Length: 226
Image (cartoon, rainbow, N blue to C red):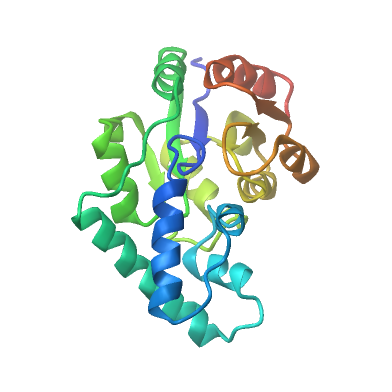
């Protein structure tokens, strides 16, 4: 009898790629378009990974839903304008490609669960030639915002795995919360936008300091039944 499939589900921004410069610039442009005082970069980084509506709600908790919706639309327009001008850069974190290739060689299936849009995720993956590595791509276009587990459930369905044979890898407490809500192993990464102690406080089973640690940590997490 063959071994069950194992699935490693990755967040994108802050985990696979460093997108904070683009996100901050588009957010500043969005607030300016609505004649609102822009939040600090540190506050913007805190909401990376949430859906646009939830991110705007976190940045302006006292504003009404209409303001959040308009800001979300302005952000989309600002990001598309940056992309059209060739100003969007989403560099891979050093060592990520090698870690993905090692996991593939070890028999892992790979997926992405991200607050990006479908179009934004495909742009990002295609720019790095990674789109064919993933058996499932889940985005905020078709799911509730993290930490709701919907994206993980869909990724597991696509891959034919269960929570016991799946793991969520991400840089924010939203990623860790999503993994916990789905009942799978949760692996934080220390090179993203939330601090390692926050990831542990949210319930991360492990936190990787470098991408090359991920294959060993993932194998350990599943072996331990994390």
